Length: 421
DNA sequence: TCTGGGGTCCTAGGACCC
DNA sequence: TCTGGGGTCCTAGGACCC
Image 1 (tube, rainbow, N blue to C red):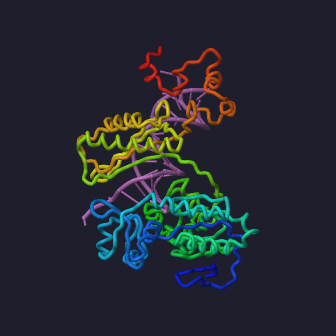
Image 2: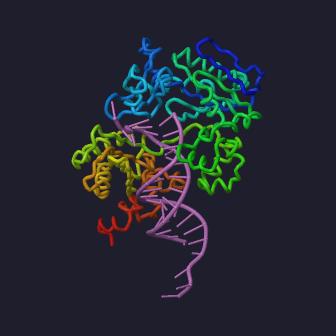
Image 3: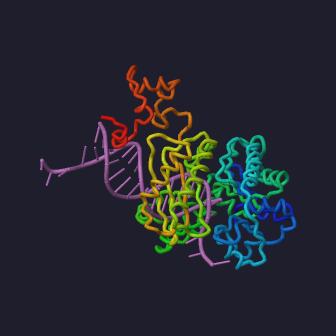
């Protein structure tokens, strides 16, 4: 292979391929922490480092949220039921997760990334894209930046990470996956297709079990097969959106830039009961607790939700969602609970056993918007200083109608309920 | 010992408006 | 009175990711 693999594996950096790779144009890095939750826990349990370690809840319905590589050697994987993981690896140590600890560790490594470049786009708690094009003059070519980054993360936090470098986000992400654990893989732009085409289709971002099976049924096994399938044929199989996108990816085309400042689009909380629940009062109590958690997080983030949604999973794992868009965005637990309980009632459970309940606030708007979201694209509206300025803009001076101002989108049924003509 | 919890994005139909 | 078409919003479901 002509791409450069530099891997660390505990014995210092070694160059696996010495082909003098030019990384200068592989300016997108994808950094992925190795077995993140397990690694953070092991910092406090050094005696367990060489033993199989699983993070998750033992007993009941828990799944593996993270496993170290000693456990993965036994076939243990994320999202696998803990019970099954323990059958594969009975000697594994199971530790319960501590999310606050992982958030702290995440902030520490993200801060290190931002020391390298301000163009950091966190993807999740344990991975991020970095655009290092502007850092090259200061710190050298991307391969050198990535090696220094890996070294610093390890020195400062005791954690290891893997880094992929490529011309696009997608290639960088694939490369980091192939570099794991504790490695670095650079894919120079001119070698993108050579790297990409032999891979199985489910290596592509967005190809999960369902799309994979649909493609396998038609004899598409590798990225090369996908690339050689005409786009219109592909879209006939898997839909216009996915088909076009996958065909582009199969040719290494990915126009997405690294951008900072992603905004949250929804905030939710859900819970799987230890034992399925039929008692409606117990379901309502759970929804109250969830409404409270969601409301607190909305307020902490300075958001309000325009839409409240309820998720119900039954004992047979069928899942329904019900949602309602409010006349006014809210960050109040009482309001959210009102909505979820009435959605629950309308869903007509007929005494079915419920396995999971979830509450989510969607269509988030800034809490300080007077009329959330309605005129967000209107420059004049944005320019208005006060609520009364906005009322004048909306309704004309002297014609302010407080009820209408607060809920201009309410449907007729609700206005009638308020006594409107 | 069947299948967590946090999300994002896409599709598709109907309502509604112009 | 034979019925278009585009745009947006709302809702439900599903695929996918970590």
